[in-house]
Image 1 (tube, rainbow, N blue to C red):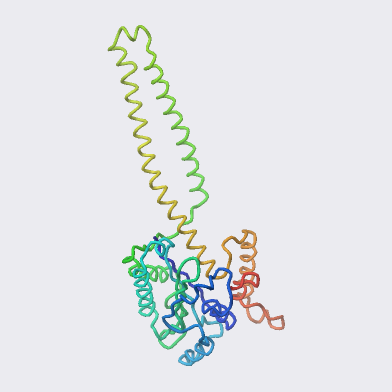
Image 2 (image 1 turned 90 degrees about the vertical axis):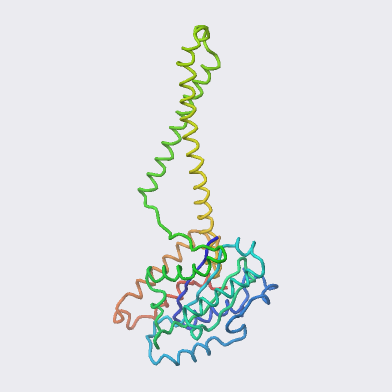
Amino acid sequence: MKQVIDILKLKTDQDIDEVANHNLRKVPSRNVNSKKTHLNRYFIGNAKMDVSQALAKKLEEVPKFRKDANRMVNLVLSASPEFFQNATPKQIDQWENATQKWAEDTFGKDNILYSVVHKDEKTEHFHIAIVPIFEGKLRSNHWFDGPAKLNTLHNSYAKVSKQFGINRGQKAVKSSQTELENYYKKVNASTAYEQQLDKKLDDLFKKLENPTLVQKLTPWTFVDNLVKPFVAQLNKNLSHYRTRAKNAEQDKKDLKMAEQRVADLELKMETLGIDPNTPFLEIEKISHEVKTAVAEKSRPSEEIIGQEKTHNLVNVQKPRSLKIK
């Protein structure tokens, strides 16, 4: 079982409101079982709170900040579905309490606008809205910027998750094209080698079953020429297939990890209100829109004076067709 951490940085009022409307169940969602919404657990805040007002009050503590600063960070914390399926209500309650304490210790209780556990979706998970104030300034980079800080965050939460049998998981490593080609070469070579092993053993076995008259009359020659080669080949085949069996066990573990990664990604997509079965071409279209927005954002401000107002990058990250549900 693996832990799940997802981070969404929010800059604009529109994005903050859309995420809050979903998290606080102020708008209907297809992936939500409304009959279970009353089971959702609020550690901080409540379903009726005015998030905009609460955020404005919190930002009064920050005298000055950039217009494009991350004013809120939506943190999703969860675990493999198996944990919630197999754990007792008491264990789940303990996990919730431990996770909430970790969030308060890590980001500061005063920085949390609301913290809610969703029990009305496929897999239970936290939504924690953080106003990233550090030393009197909006500084989301203090916790979330760069691989090193994110790795520290994962490791920190893993210490809490470990007591519930939930592991941190391995870092994702992308295979290169060369590595993939070498892998398939090894698979093909292994298949050919096994065919060769099996053929040799079958040929020796057939000869062993049907010895010639001369071989029957000379038992020592029969043993030297057929029995010993057969036993040697048998041992060779056994050694090979025992190794294959061990590798197969490792492959099962790798497959389990891959399946867990899929489950984690699907949970993240559901959290954003995106159907996990969204066609690849549609995802590609979203990716193109994001890249276009990034390029537009990177242009010097004088280049866009007089032009129509560009879409905010965060808005493009959640196109109208895939808005938070």
